[in-house]
Amino acid sequence: MFKKKNRSPYGLVLLSFAAIIITGTVLLWLPWSNLPIEAGSGGQNLASSATPWDFDWGTRLINAFFSATSAVCVTGLTPYASIAAQLTLFGKIVMMVLISLGGLGFVSVFTFIVTALGGHLGFIDRYIIKEALSLDSIHGIIRFVRKMLLITLSFELFGAIIYAFVFVPQLGWSQGILYSIFHAISAFNNAGFDLIGNQSFIPYADNLIININTMALIICGGLGFPVIIEVFRFKRIRNWSVYTKIVLFMTSVLIVGGAAVLFFIEMGVSDLTVLQAVFASVTARTAGFSTVDMNTVSLAGRMVICVLMFIGASPLSTGGGIKTTTGFIVFLTIYSFISGKHPHAFKRTFSNSTIIKATSLTAIALVTVLLGFIIIERIEINRAALSAFDSTAYVFEAFSAFCTVGLSQGVTPLLTVGSKIVLILLMFLGRVGPMTTIAMFSDAMTRENKKTFAYIEENLPIG
Image (cartoon, rainbow, N blue to C red; front, side):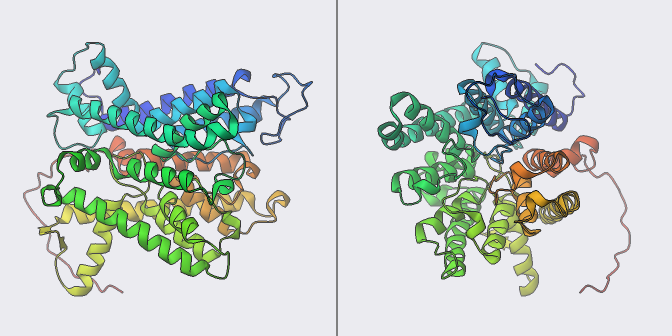
């Protein structure tokens, strides 16, 4: 499977995502994926007399590249006013495939196909898969990949059936089933793409079936496959691992706490309902669907959403962000510093290397988002097309891209090519992870430290 023994597993992760993005770009660039659009219109349809070739090839290419990246990185940002009005049936199917490959990871899908066809994976192959999936051991790795595929298909099938109770009576069998499957795949993979139009799920803000089903798929997809497997395997909480307990604890706190803070902040400002607040708290953790117009949410509310986006989902899930475990270690470290104790929780203490890695990842992620915002703000400054938005919209966009969320105030289709490329880079880095990117060029994080000496410690004034 992977012939070169010195092949970096981190490099393979980056290359696999890049290969899928390039392939998806080509497919979405083809006229057969797009309805006729007017050059530079950002996805607005032409009159029925236009042919599929009546478009600006350059505009179509950057938009296809952006859409493919957003789908593979399961982000949900789109350069089009409406995916439903922009893409043909072929284009929508391409998007579903890209979202599925992006959510599971090409290495996982390829591994499943190879083993299903009777292929053999050697030790080097299994080691590369282990590193690509950030697992602790190669033991049972093929079985784990198969469980990933089974869990994904099961949740997506169940979610599609629930969606069908709403979409089929409303849209008919053929379109209703397409909408049901598309949104089930998009929700479980935390992608946030929808076929409703340019309003996301706002027309269904009061529909309990759509809201509950979408939130359930987002939460389950964001928990991570190891957690789902362990919860189904061990029914009793006392048998769960510390990792599972931390993930479930953080997920519960972020959903409930985020919803409560959003509701009270927006009280009397945007008239956010309890259901909308809960949905926003869930979807902000890398899903990107919305039942409220982000332009009606106050600045304070959008900053809360940015925090939720930044923390994101859990490791080995379909979501992004710095991950719940990273956020837990950072918050625990701050609390331990204030209380004068070493970080510990759930009858476990955490190593210095874990603390350093968590704080480093958080710092790198913040700097990356800040840098992306600065570049976009400089590119788009004083543009008449964006006069209705202030700079905070670019901050929101940068957080949404890097954390692979997809929430937006509507500025994405109006951005220039330069800003779209910045967002593409942010989405890519956010999906593969800053640590994976760094590890590709340096093995310092993974090799064992063989130094036999240590420098004298020095205490510096802090704060």
